[in-house]
Image 1: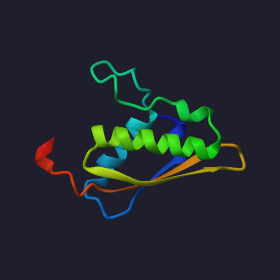
Image 2: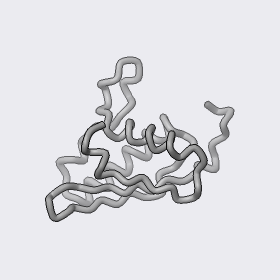
Image 3: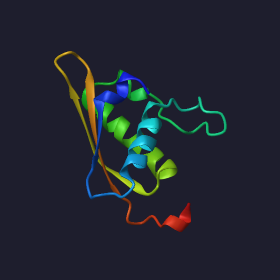
Image 4: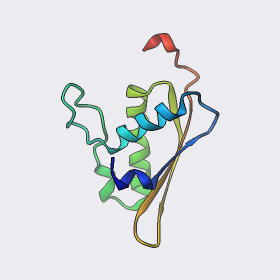
Length: 108
């Protein structure tokens, strides 16, 4: 997944069990480009938000991530996303996740 994932912090808001798996799945979803995975062309993000102003990028990223999480990792919800530009010009993300109370395990 490369150095990009070092700039992503996934925060477990409400003590999710199996957080290591969720963290791994969420990182895979974020770094994958939609349309590139045979058999699951919808998996991944479009990357559209990278060309936008910071607040617009955050909102676009949040909306797309929320939609994809609902589809591919339905046991969690995205509670919030923060983005910060570091002094070196890198973008860091904090993604706050919580249990999706409406999801039931037998829905898989």
